[in-house]
Image 1: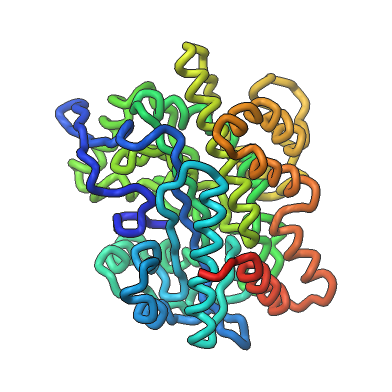
Image 2: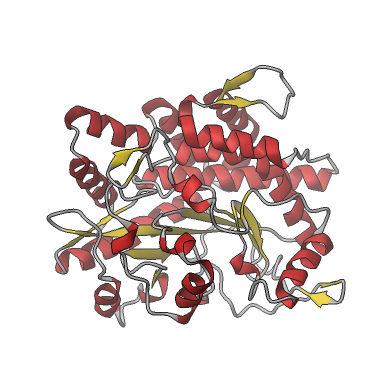
Length: 404
């Protein structure tokens, strides 16, 4: 959820910053400091008891075990002591992301097993209760809970965040605007949280309505330019509403300090190949939008209520969602899979140029075999055992990892 600690970030904090003045405020940025379209991916994992598969409060034990290892800078705690976050280094292709994620998954799996723990990746834990989770002993997390109370204590959810570097702030603003129409499809592809507190919720992404209770969440507003964005962030900061812009948790947002657009809509996914496919999809989407901006093409934006409605349909129905086809303005709704396949045709050439065409094929695999939520529900419907669902999540999270 939170990324104020730069040591876990996929982009270095030491790059020389440039400032942008807006309405008397300055919002520094590093757009252009990294090569365009380079990637960084963050995943949030569950720490599980090796026998009961319930969440366990052992983040401090895990962090002590990794002290001094070369991968230590890529691993950090989160709000709850039962959550572990990993972050890849900067990668050029989705194939590089795949290698880094497998290495990180293998290492944290190894460390966890030494402590008789397991690791799992999904949008929610199917049966653990948020009331039993302890808050990580850091000032940022304590302050967050103090400010938000029940809203923060209930936030037992897990996400996948994808950073894509962009070379200009004005371009980055328009790319974020262009990505809004893709939030519903991205959520449908990644949905992996159909359970909450031991019960099927009827949603495929229960993580989304839980996180929607947070302030400054959901789809971002449509900004005219970087000055417009800087003015809004500056007002929030100078009035003390937020300490800095990382306390804005939109589904897709600018990350000026890293020089990236950060796509945050996705549930944490169980299979590493699906995380890689979503990374390739987002990278090619960003390149496609950047080139449209560079040509002077209009990047269409749509009213927030339309974007939010499609996002809700993705959270409710997943790959069966009947979404509004906002880009063509059709009066009838169309299956989300149809929209995704159309997008794949639009971005395939860009993925090829980026060297990620093979990884992009993983999106077709998701459409063919189903998302994580569907797999969880199939297991549950076969025996009505929610523990078995978590066992399968752990096995699939760990199985594709390669030795570190």
